[in-house]
Image (cartoon, rainbow, N blue to C red; front, side):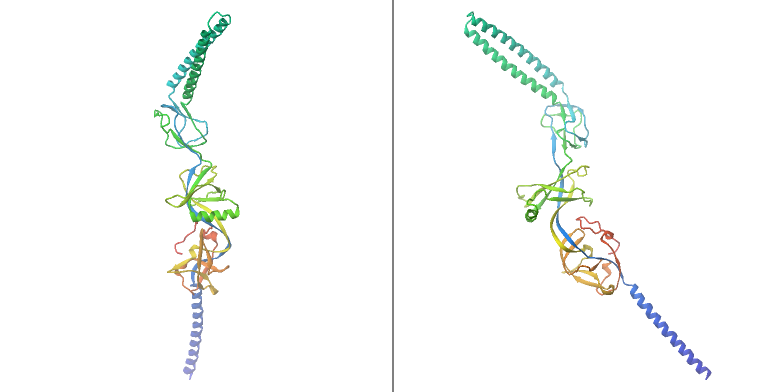
Length: 395
């Protein structure tokens, strides 16, 4: 009886212990399921008025660019500049051997002085002859002849004065000056080079502030852009333009459209357009490439979802949103325009929805998620055309 009673109590104790263990085990299992949700990062979709913009490939061009050619021929004997140097209008750049031109000036001066002396003598003779004619001492024909000589000598003096002026100009042109403010290119000629008048390019100088950015737009884009700006300001001219440099940095100064070609290019069907940008620090160099962005119409209350949240399988486009109890929920969406790091969503997502932006590769519909909320700034999302998104090893 003792052993039977004792065994019964021991059996009850074991049963109770196993029941508690089962309960604890069950609680531990539920906790593991809650803690084993897929780790994801998510953010609330944006809703705001969003301007549409178009991007084009552009290239920086100098506002003015001049190839400097000598006006006289000769050997370069002195150089006052170096390639890449900034110069101002009127700065001396080169000096050409001037000895022959100096001799020409001296010769022209002597010739002019001689012709002026001859003219003076002829005028004295004419005055004397006119006095003699008044007293009937000589024939009138003599005075007429002398007067003709004076006119001839006057023409000779004028011609020699012109020759002296030309010789002096040639002498002055042996020093070559900068025609405008700007920067020289590095392909300048060296001292000792023989330069031919009007043929040898000594150096090229281009203005650096302001500069043009040239790009091309299609006929459809041109008409749409023109319609928009006619509605807003009455003219396409002076529409604002922004550019992004090749390193992804947005140029801090806004430009304005100032020129459009008179016709579409026959081979491409595009219109060449130029925007003018101030360049006070000389950051923009002719030949640099940039992405040009033209503003367009504004979409009111647009819903924006990061591009990284968009999933596409076959013909389906969807996002995963955080549903009730942090469970994943698939939503089919209709995409609109791409704006920087985002897409405009036309349908499928509502304001206030939270979409998964990282950890998507491990997700399926209805799975538990361990959600970390993030901001666009933390993820590097931007509405600019050149996103700088932060990436992790897995998304």
